[in-house]
Amino acid sequence: MSIRTHSRRSVRLVLFLVAALVLSLAAPAVAKNNSRNNKSNNTPTLAVSSMKSETSLLRSGALPDGPMMVHGDGYVKETSILVKFYPMDSGYLTDADGTSFGFEWTPPGPGTYTLVSWQVTKRGKWEKAAETIVTVSD
Image (cartoon, rainbow, N blue to C red; front, side, top):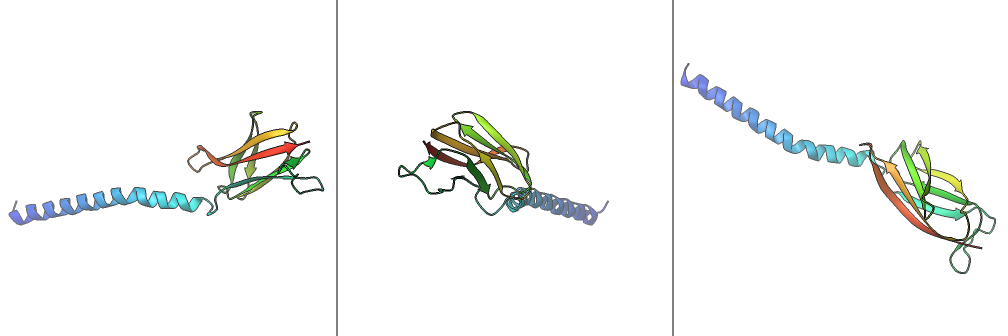
């Protein structure tokens, strides 16, 4: 085997190793960029509004007692969304066809409630998306 053949193999091996190293360093950056594109550009929102005819807040800033509309926007497209109600530790599970949802909720009575929305990411993990606090008055 000549020195020239051995030298060419060494150069090819070095080039192959350099290319493999560059690809291994670039792959996580490309994957991270793609995961950003799968999410909506908006930050997920969670809001509650009264369904009564008097839609204004009471003087205390509380919502009047009765049925409420819970709605959100800016979620991962076509995912499961869970809205948990505290302190009751109950929840409402919905599938969003788009990036938003809405459903009716009647609080069990006057008080302060924390609503937390969770969404399933493309990796199949539950992720906290948004939180809001609601005070309901008589």
